[in-house]
Image (cartoon, rainbow, N blue to C red; front, side, top):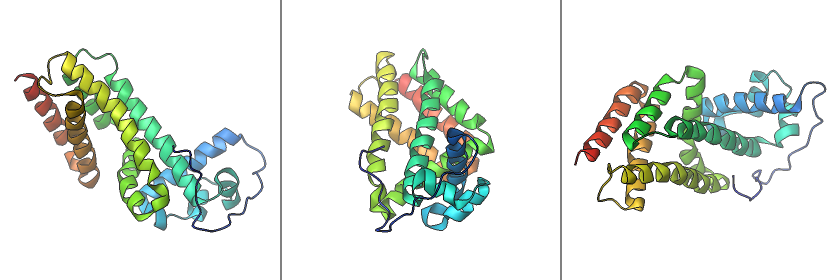
Length: 212
């Protein structure tokens, strides 16, 4: 997450008292989980602190205590969600013998996600739109690009090393993989039935590139 602190649309956000009882880390996690679902389903504007608190079975004061307000909460949900998903993608591809093996592993992991885990993807798919609508979120796109660069850059290096991406520079290979895999990711959000066939199409493109 960027160093710049969260903004609150000029509002003065009241800091409420800490909820009595319970573990603070567990409470933060409950709020983040509830907020992720609410933001994914309703968008930033449509989500309300009151509804998030209700889903977390907490008073709204708990949200204000731990996060200060909806903007700061959205940023923290984004940081937690992006880190979780991209770390899992990295783990799925770790120590694979080839780019094709790594991509197949990532696709299998994505296809195996249950409905609770797919809400992570639903939330992340909306972030670019929210950043366009709300300038205070635009710094998250810079973080998003850097995080993607780390994963797709590592995959590109693997593909070049194994001869599957011959003729591409590292930058070109990184962008090819970003376009293929993020295109699949976004299409699967808008058309969930395309998750598995779209993933197979990406795998086939990587296979063909490796056979040139």
